[in-house]
View 1 (cartoon, rainbow, N blue to C red):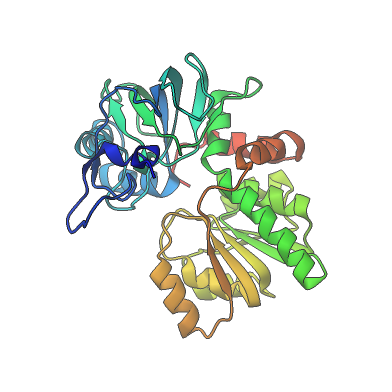
View 2 (view 1 turned 30 degrees about the horizontal axis):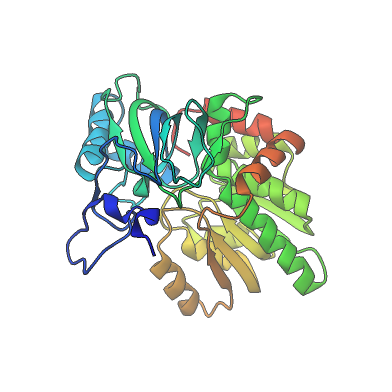
Length: 352
């Protein structure tokens, strides 16, 4: 198999302890030289979208302004990609196709404005403007630079009927609603009735879209959990959930008390660490937990379920389901309350 299809030729430093070739996501550092190989696509970057867990961690450590800009630039300079060494996550980007290799299978063309649907943790990236136009108040980062897509990368043309910031916000989390829909549909067939569903982090981007997907797929009960009364007001305004409850998702006993009775499916869309045990307690025996947050500790989830004697299936939301981008856009365009909720979220400057 041609390793270049996966970007292995761009690995500059496989990292300590690596044995043999590694894929770009696993590598410590990539070669982000802006040359377009036969199966590659070269993109002029105009905006980065840091994932929620990474943005929260960086802001908590560096604040905003010059220190935060310097921290992000240092990561990209050192690693040739935006791969936060603390959270292990990155985000995605928006840009314009500069060049396509003759053997690229992505179907993109020069001049096309696109959003990538693969993580920045595996995307060769250069920043050339020092992020001078970013004040650090928002995870969407105005940026000048270049990026390289591989044959197995995923990108989508930007829709012409939506503002860039709203489209990018949707694309950033489009795997969440698509997988939520799939799991609910499968559960309905298995159970013989629509399942009850709880979304932790229901007022955020992925939480809003997960609620919308659950609403459209059909549920017997749809609960949204948020951390504060202010977030509850935001979630209630969308009208997507049957019930909004307030609890800290990191407090398992508070979550168990708020989500009573437990639901058959729990979707975790919280960008903070420590939500695993609450999610498990919010889920009925034989139910399913979907972890979408990059702050999730999968060892804590596995050992927590064991320690709680919880018979639950736990799924990792990997961010890709075939057709996920168009699915999320369709929710935005057709489900009442979604567009307004996402727009309200984008107006907020603090981390979710």
